[in-house]
Image (cartoon, rainbow, N blue to C red; front, side):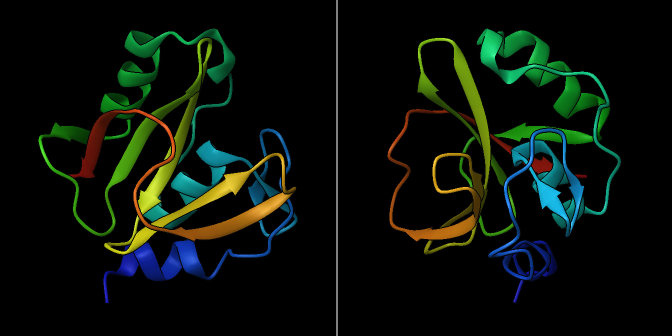
Length: 122
């Protein structure tokens, strides 16, 4: 099993918390940071819909854009016109911090939102 996926799955059930970085609470960026074992940016806002800015953060975290995702890669998705979100691909679905459900969840299948790009740890 991919270690990124294992670390992401270990966070399932953790409460959603904006800018959360621990098992006390996580948002999508915090979950990605925990799963990848990386530092997360301190100041960000995914609600701007600014793809170039989000891609800059991903590159700064030593991630690279790839054509096709594999287990452990991050999917940058667009749930709404001015919103971006990160999810961790598992090969059978995604683990992500779901604000509406208020916790980290795993969902099967394809992304319900358009995937802007797949990002892989170097």
